[in-house]
Image (cartoon, rainbow, N blue to C red; front, side):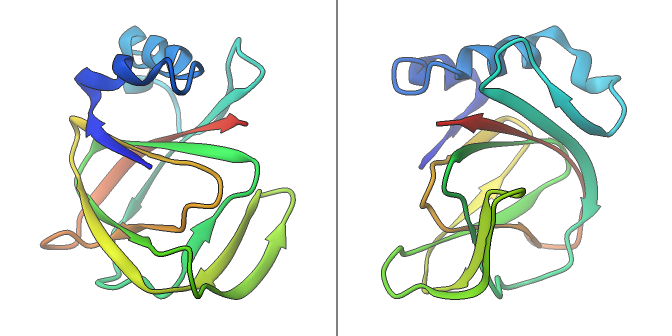
Length: 150
């Protein structure tokens, strides 16, 4: 997992080279005018989803876990909390779905990340995370999640 300022994302390119594509898309400004939806990039390992929602839950009931893809989650508007769970003692609640590259599990929360518009979170395969949580008060969020095939 990586939690940092967007301005520092370039520092992680040696660890995750596909971040170069993420940085290029962020710098292009096209996310500000693009319609909500799913998009491919010139890099076959990288795709992204642009969407909006209202944060409604105070606590994570389940954590999402991927097997093949790394999530790079960035808020464009609003704020939210993301909880991260321990990998130990996870109890699967929804079986793995290949098409979504995800399964859901209950687990013990380790920490909370308070996402803002100038930060990003990277969740590697196997890292349990629960986004979409209320941070202080319910909030309308616009978010982009880059999916990087590992």
